[in-house]
Image (cartoon, rainbow, N blue to C red; front, top):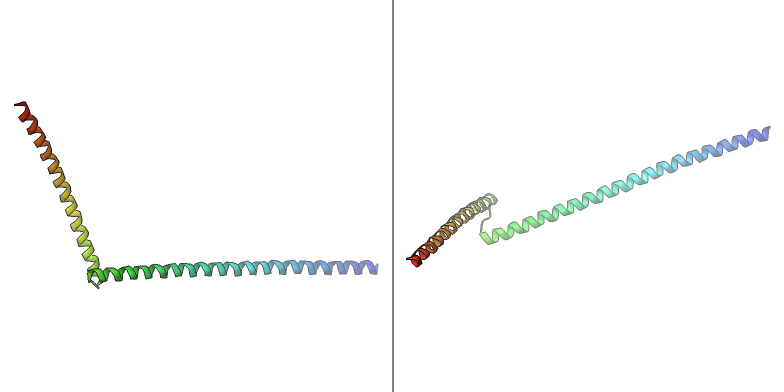
Length: 120
């Protein structure tokens, strides 16, 4: 009877140890996963920051080249100059389109006059 109780006691102790070990293993796995996720998140943040820094550096280089080419150092003045140039380009394009339409009308009139002349 004592042997049976001793076996049951040892069995329950082993079971508790196994359960405790399983809980400890799960907790350790969760800690490992959290640490991996934090490392991954940090890597992503660093990559994004690096990409952002590279983008800013690229913009700064482009702005420096524009400043050098135009001689304009004030950003607002540069923006206004580009807006003015874009407006002017649009108006010139529109004017060009109107002239092209006029040319086509005149060419058609010339063709009509030539045909009328031949018929005379």
